[in-house]
Amino acid sequence: MYRVRSKQLQVKLICLYDPKSTVAEAYRTLRTNIQFAGVDRQIKTLMVTSAGPGEGKTTTVTNLAIAMAQSGKKVILVDGDLRKPTIHNTFYISNRLGLTNLLTGQAEFVKVVHRIPELPLDVIPAGSIPPNPADFLGSQPMQRLIASLREEYEMVLVDTPPILPVTDGQLLASYIDGVLLVLGCNKVQIDHARKAIALLKHVGANVIGSVLNNKKEKGRNSYHYRYYAED
Image (cartoon, rainbow, N blue to C red; front, side, top):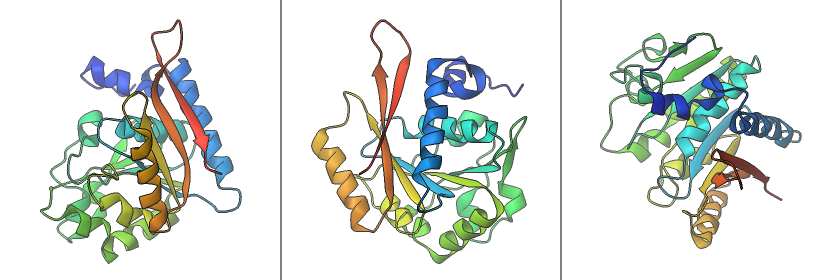
């Protein structure tokens, strides 16, 4: 089995290391809900974001990618958080070359994509942090990349910075199939969540639902993840 060197990171990859847990099952339920959310409009590219920092968006998108790969889908996970990228740390892969290097023509696709052993899961780290992250996510090269990945993979998942502090996510959301908003229980304020959704819908984003993250179940130590579809 694929091993990471930190027990803390193994907890974050719960779908891989504890697939029989209630949390892993919740991610599989989320996976199923996303599939049904695409009945009228096929969702092959999905952006996962949050209203503010520290709400668990990266943990959510990482485990969702694993859950989808475990179902047999050909999945790619792209670290589009060009401000504070962390996906390379989760999988212990190099971040020397990544998304930004690919978009600027400094590296070819085969040099930036990493295959995660035992899963049909590919990962593209963020790469060099640019001075203008928003310009990268809203660029024509990024749009062409997403379109190309959509043809190559059954599901493309993209992690982005939170919506409220910066505009990066809004730019990407305007041309991606669907957006999943992660909300931290007892962390996000209701008006912040509403503002994040309003900002996404302002650019024509297809907000397919939200995940209430870090909701503790009574009598249990594990965290519970809930999914709410948008009306």
